[in-house]
Length: 356
Image 1 (cartoon, rainbow, N blue to C red):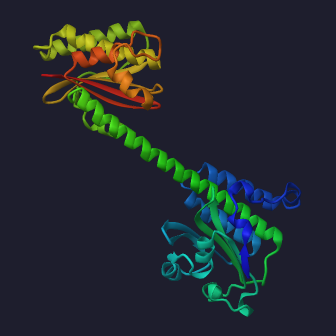
Image 2 (cartoon, rainbow, N blue to C red; image 1 turned 45 degrees about the vertical axis):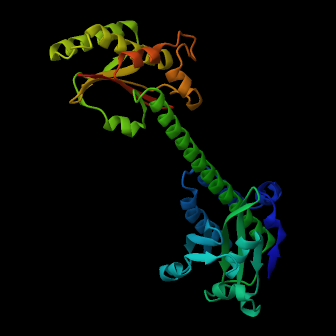
């Protein structure tokens, strides 16, 4: 038994089965294609490992597999497995670096292949030996020189693996590492986006004295009052004129113009929906009412406001990405008592509030 230095290389340096080898084994090729498709298209690749590894086990005549993921410095958690009872899985759920074959492979970032285990004394193989395993191969999941976990297969039917079998395990391990690392990177980007959104929220609220409030879609929907009108679809000047008329009539009927004055209310509404038409081509609008304010609600399915442009788009008079005068937000902020905004690709929700 020994460590295999190839597993310490970067993902780009790791070898995959040759095309010639794959053509000699259509089932192996099918396994790799299926693994790549499932892992790289899934938002939860750590859950897909179970399905893929069970198929690899059947193809290789293995009886166990274990997938550990690094949880914190020096310790791993069992993510997926097959071939041992649930009670045993709970006993080995957490594994420290340097413990057993998987812990050593993770610590050293090197592949370990153990052969003829019953007749080869080694404290690292005592655990898998107790499962009746005769040959065991553990691959560190590597990405850009960093170990993120391990993937191992064991067989009780023979004392060694063939080279092509180890190559298949390595290829599947590489795919799993790439998919999991991609998910990790996506989660880090989401965290950074949320940090940026929160920073913008605080800065914009401070600059506008709380008049402009950035929200998530869920937050803005929870802030909505009761509908006063039905939802109106607008994609042309004619539909915009009809919507103005319906909104005006609703405000008059409710006696809500008050100190705001109907022209100011309609000017604010018109700017909001015109902004949606410029950037999305169409939009939906509705008048709502809370206990203290009227809400002019506008929703569109356009590209949203890019985070990088958000401060300029909402606070800078004359800023525009579509060649217009860029005064929409300036007018809306000046004419409203409060503006709520939630924006992302595929949905922007704008709510202009007028105190009653």
